[in-house]
Image (tube, rainbow, N blue to C red; front, side):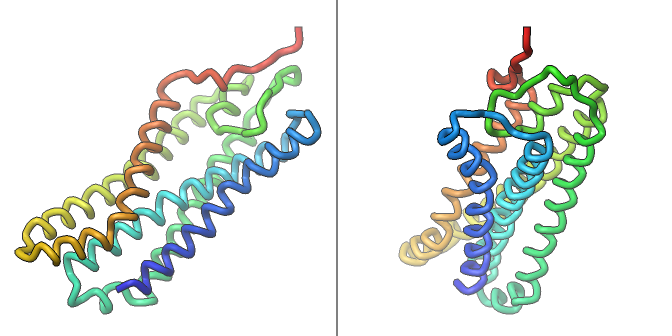
Length: 221
């Protein structure tokens, strides 16, 4: 029952390493050089990979929740359902979906025009922050940004909640205390990761709906 989960965990670990690599190296370079400058191309590149790996984190957690659902609710059919072909397809579809979403968001930003006297005093190029700096109309960018968060954040969130609701009902119906403990222990670590993800989705939603302090820009006087 652990082989598919190890496969998903290895992919999640790789994505997390790449995710932190989108911001940490630039932060260290800023500290070393005492400069917060970043080129336009560098900013777009950082934003693209940040959106890509953040989305992959979300999708892989959803796939892992489905894996635990099958393992606990359908243990006799687990090896048949979670075969190597399906596991590979789930990871591949996650990559394709996130690449397309990140590419769309980045191309939408490239269509915007920016005033030459605006600076971003931060090492991290956040999508919403970049859109707010544009001098041109950002209506389409806002629509795509909200749809992206709603579909790629809300959809996986619903999948995780559904999977764990089924898991909890299945565990509750077990007569053996030892069986309940064993079933819960197989998904406890992923449940903690999923809880963290839910908190991040709420934070991202609030960040889109409310103005943030780090979205302020510096303009030459």
